[in-house]
Image (cartoon, rainbow, N blue to C red; front, side, top):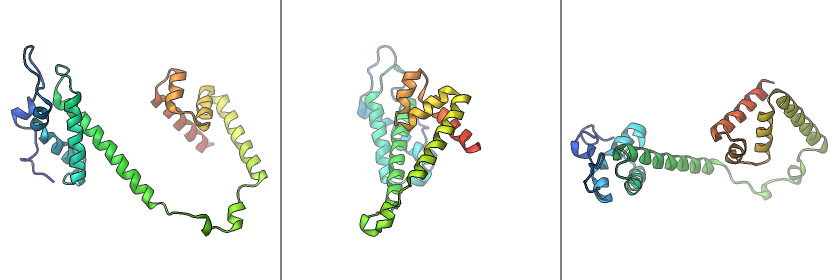
Length: 192
């Protein structure tokens, strides 16, 4: 963990690095923005990822986020540090998600068909089980349609593989709203 004297954004130089440009000033270069705001990386790591603050991979990913911020920053749209903070956090979050996903995949044991017997291979659901399952699903959809037709439509389309973005565009709603409809449906089904 970095000490407080190493990483805060206390110096005026790091705070004022091209953050508010005057009308006739020359915008700072990418390298200049990166060098002036290097401490921002350690501040974010210490605040949001204290257990990973000294991990070289996280520092490298945060540096890439700072570099992307410096490349994409348009002078005059606001403070660079605010923009860079969001870019660095986005890069770190994406890396953290990828890191966690790969850890979960490693935990799944490999299965092969050689390890399974013929009974296990053939032992899929019987015709009666599939028919009963389909009947239950239709009954559940009937109840949802009666309660909330739009929610039933969203749930049906999601089961058929359509994305939230497609449904949101079609229904003129946000993806978050579509996601919330699916969550409400699941809760309602769990209560039934």
